[in-house]
Length: 170
Image (cartoon, rainbow, N blue to C red; front, side, top):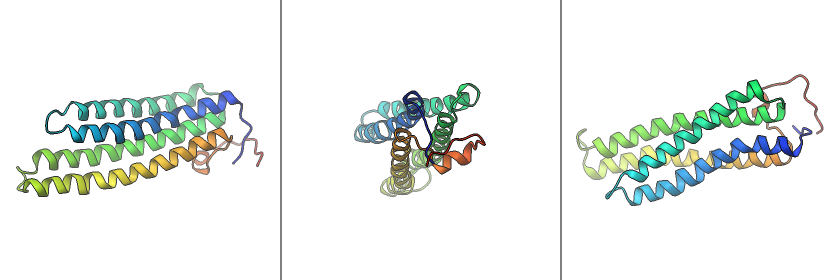
């Protein structure tokens, strides 16, 4: 749905989508590749990746929660709540697949798996669905950011925060 939004509102609405895109692309793709390439020598990049991701997801969810109390613009609130919903979804996915991957990678031998089977399960079942979901979320966030620039609110965002006084220009 198209709304009349000022440049300042579009910028505020786009902010959390940009944070999520940074988390998805820079932290989870680039730092993950770095962490995997260095996993035999050090686990530090892996821990840095987890800490940065958790911090950015917490920031998105906290800011969106605060926008319900402080943000006067319905347009901005809708976009921020949509970003928070996707951040929560990603956090759940991250914790579940990350836990499975860590258990299989570091404890697969103790569970009776051969090293190759443990790594295959860790990265095949643990990380492959995660990366596919990450790709879908990147596309959705790019679309949401584009809709911010064109002063539109996705129907999924309107469902999260309906308003009776919305001005429809579309």
